[in-house]
Length: 405
Image 1: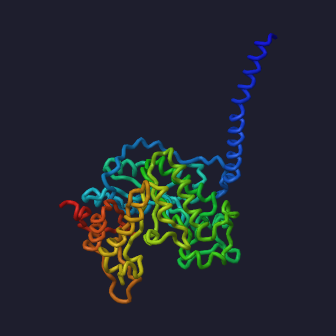
Image 2 (image 1 turned 135 degrees about the vertical axis):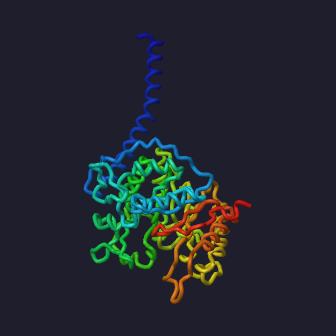
Image 3 (image 1 turned 45 degrees about the vertical axis):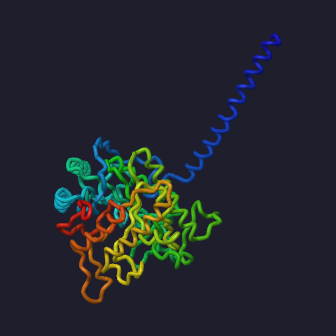
């Protein structure tokens, strides 16, 4: 071999070596990440299944349009799959409402429909919505925007099946004073479990996933040291307990949004209204600004009945207009400080709160519902959701009060 050829081959060899170095490094890094992910997944043993879960798949092909402003109602699985559904469809069609928030995973932790045979979620499924495909077709035909509600960390069903993912006291699953059990936001396995359900909802045709109970149990700061639970990936964190909880909740929301990006759905989170008035909640782990930075829609639950003496209002339940007005001012300020704020779509009250009264209960009718809507509109918040646990909504409400001139 001549000197010139030797130089050329030497040059090519060095060049190949340089090119291969970053590839090798990248491959090593990718392998490490894959290994870490595999360790975290540990086959999703939540319902005695294997890692390769078979999801309920449905290629909807639906054509839903995002409304100019979402004005929706809450719909349980029972209502969506029963005779009340026709009444609720009629309500939306004959008013300026245009959306439904439908339970897909409800407050106890059950699915409200039967997934595909062989799904690891079959054991937690109720057949409330017996024909999801037909339901989605009806919503499309009527131009009703579909939002899937998924209750995340309040989950008595999962806590019973997997106590190791919950909070325990004296070796038993801990329940609050309402008899409800929670699973731990510190557990990545719980994140995956709920996001897989969200993917099912997206594949069914829902245009938005709304996560509820994205938090620790209320008052958790008072008894967290009495409970038995593991910190998961947060075990070695140098943060204090309050900030650990905030970190776990925020990380879940970011994880869910990233996992759902492929499905081109909006991600929403329900959050306590008072979370907007403080930097971070001490017990439940909600930081309004940080959660808002990771969602497309933020839905504060601002029911007047759920506030104690606040904003200088002695009995907020009796003054819905004033309460919502004062709240809206605070929220606008908090969201206004963000570079890319989400859409604000608060939950408002269409129910009575007899537990607040020893005498006659303040009734919520047309005037009270409209007062909340008017207060939102006057403060530039044009979207809202109505909550009534029994899905019995006030008649003859003007849902555009103040917008029409």
